[in-house]
Amino acid sequence: MDLFNDLERVKLKFIAVCETLVDKQQLSEENFKEIRILLDTLDDHDEEYISRRLNDLTGGRLDLMFWEQD
Image 1 (cartoon, rainbow, N blue to C red):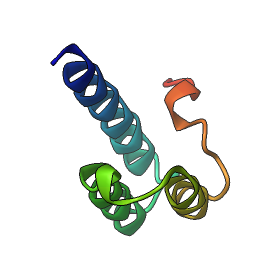
Image 2: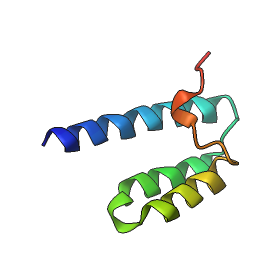
Image 3: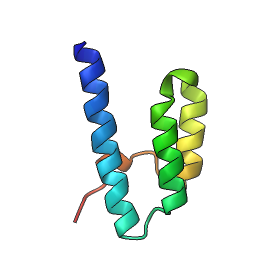
Image 4: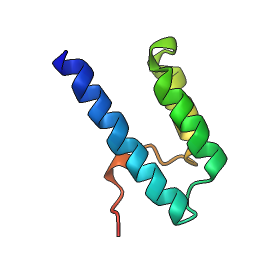
């Protein structure tokens, strides 16, 4: 269960960063909605699809987790 809990923590952190970006108008609400759906369905997709979708939804910025939050 530790791996599951770790994954859930990463998802929550990723969502928090996305919420901040939406607040700053650096990520659209629609793309954020699509990211949440993608996170909820990770098991349904392979790594290549997830990477491609995140790339599309974030405008090529796959490193959302590492963006500075002002």
